[in-house]
Length: 231
Ligand code: C5P
Image (cartoon, rainbow, N blue to C red; front, side, top):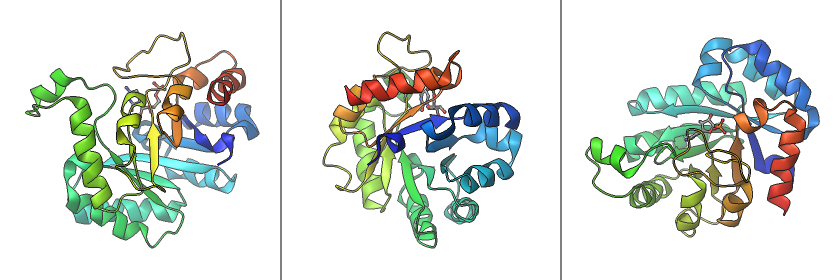
C-alpha cells in the first residue's frame, strides 16, 4: 500500500470552507480523508462528492447504530456518494453489521468497518454501561463478532491493534484513530499511540486529525506523521 494511503486525515470541522481550505493546502500529500458527523451535518453531502471527484478516498464515519433496515439505507446512500469506507457500531450486533455488509456489496469500492470501543473509553466507562470486562477484552469480543458478520475491518486504538492480530482475516483493515506524534499531548485519547506504534502493532491505516489540521503548517505535520510511519 502506498504510504500516502495509510494516513487518513480527519476533517473535523464545523463548516465546508475550513475543510476545503485544509484539503487545498494539503493537496497531493493526502489521499484519504475522514468525514464525520459534524462536517457531514454542517456541510452536507456535496463536499463528499467534491472530494471523490478530486480523486480522494473518503472514509465516511457515520458510526451507524440503528435497526438493520435503516443501517442498510444509510450504507446505500454512502455508497451512492462514492465513499470508500463507512463505519457501523459492532455493539449493535450481528444483524446491523450483516445488513451493512450485504448492502455494501452493491458498491465494489465500499468497505464496512466495525467500531469496537471508542478510544476515549476506559474500563470505568464500560462498567458504567454494564460491560464488566476490560476495554481490551471488549474490543476482542466485538472484533470477532464483526469478522463473523463479514465486516471488512475494524477500528481500534493503537494499543489494541496488536491484540487483534489474527482476529480479522488477512485482508481485513485495522484502522486506528487516537494517534498522536511522539511527545505530543494525547488530548481526548485514553488509549493513544504514535503512528509507528500503530502500524507496527498491525494497523493498516492511521487516522490523524488535529495533529495535522490544527497545526500551523499542516503539510509539515503530515510529513512528520509519515516520517514516523517510515522510521
Ligand atoms: O484526536 P484527533 O483529532 O486525531 O481525532 C481524529 C479522529 O479520530 C476523530 O474524528 C475521532 O473520530 C477519532 N478519535 C477517536 N477516539 C479518540 C479521539 C479521536 O476515535 N479518543
